Length: 220
Image 1 (cartoon, helix red, strand yellow):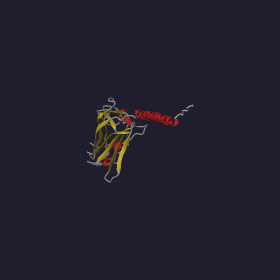
Image 2 (cartoon, helix red, strand yellow; image 1 turned 45 degrees about the horizontal axis):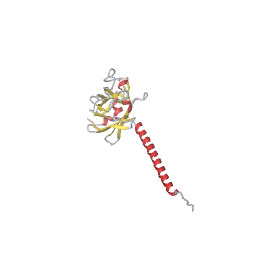
Image 3 (spheres, one colour; image 1 turned 90 degrees about the horizontal axis):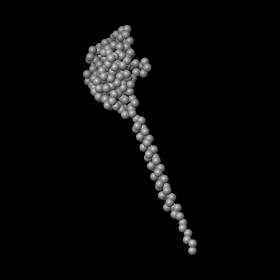
Image 4 (cartoon, one colour; image 1 turned 45 degrees about the vertical axis):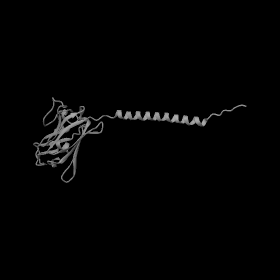
């Protein structure tokens, strides 16, 4: 008698199906991992920044100022890669403040006339380390190396601005027109700030989009 053997096709097919699913899963996992790794590798890491910030309003141009003193950084930070945002509320609850970025073309944020002199520059002005030490000026027409966007933040760098001499008694009086350096950083009506008022100060690292410094600063 001739015996006949039948192949168990029902047993083979599920095994092949499972193996194919495993292979596809491994390939997809590798692809997703590679894609995620690519995204992480292309994302720029944000530097670290620590600063002291002081805002003073004496009611007169003498002694009034905003000043940033850099205490530490994880690496030198070009100011062209930064945005400074200040915000505060006046006595009526109106939101005030300003946004500062590096100079683009001739779009200066400080554009001020005093008598016959026209001042054009990008505030806040840089001093000390990280700024070209051979060209720094203490007042008047500042050198290009001191304009925000042209210097680098390292420990010992200071950024600051004061009001023009036309400002007195918590108001602009006469002799000057336009936007001066402190208004460029704190916004229109900054003279409404009084001792104890709070100004929120943020520094944003543009390449990474991260906030690398934030502080609520009490006005002195």
